[in-house]
Length: 398
Image 1 (cartoon, rainbow, N blue to C red):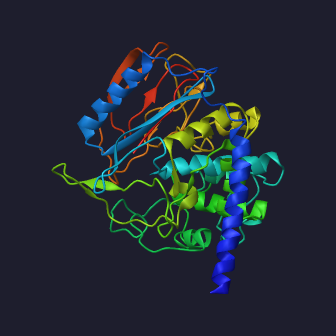
Image 2: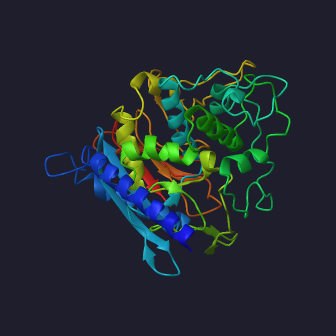
């Protein structure tokens, strides 16, 4: 009993310290006030109307959105329900599964270690993660982050696949995650072909632990979330009581919304296991635009697409896919492709779903300055994006 009380006291003390540090960070964060830019009155109704139309067409139970314009966090709101059974509305604080957007947070932490000289992106991963076995060819952290390592993704897309619908909880998350794939053969020689891999980012998490000497989740909390003012972001721990966490839903073939199958994502936190809110991800946006987490040169390196030696097209940089704005060959922007984005030169809204299965062929619009849509297309995508004028907009949903 005494041991339990001591553990609780240590946890409480640590949270008090984190809260005090966070308040200091928030005081310096760029939020809207009477003296700072706010979302223009004509844009908000357009955004809200587009969100309402999207929710009506997809029957998504809840959605949260945030706007960052010119480096300022201007607006955030929730729509619909975070919990249908208990009639809990979605708000800007509602926590959704980031899914693959978790990779962006992990990559940012890795690049911080690169900046500090603690991580050599081109050294074999075993230098920092000795528990990962040697393969026929050396694998580097740069290759893993760019999905050129040859490490596989899930074995299938079926919910019956234990790698997709895992229900087992792991206290040693990185070690357990590595055990899912570390003994498997590579799909190709590293550097030669693109193979998207969530498992690969578990290896990046192990590299972060080895390079930093800290637990992966602790390093991100202290070096990414705290400096960015992301008070709510945390990993999706099924045993923890987490305020504002949404319920998760699925749809039947007939379109009926139902509770989703159970998932314990403790085995894939670096690549798909974080929870966050629209509000927190807007703060992440501001911190990245203001170069508070990494230097501009490092950010540009993260945005540079890697090139497989087989000559195939690879638009994936060190943390997320890169495409180009129409008529613009100089500034990389995130497009409405397969992978969930967070932000780019033109900030945009990424959909964080309550749905475990995603509706496809969704409408998306690109917005110019003044909020007028200039492009609307039907795309085969797993999410719904808005792009507003440059350095303007970030959106999130359930």
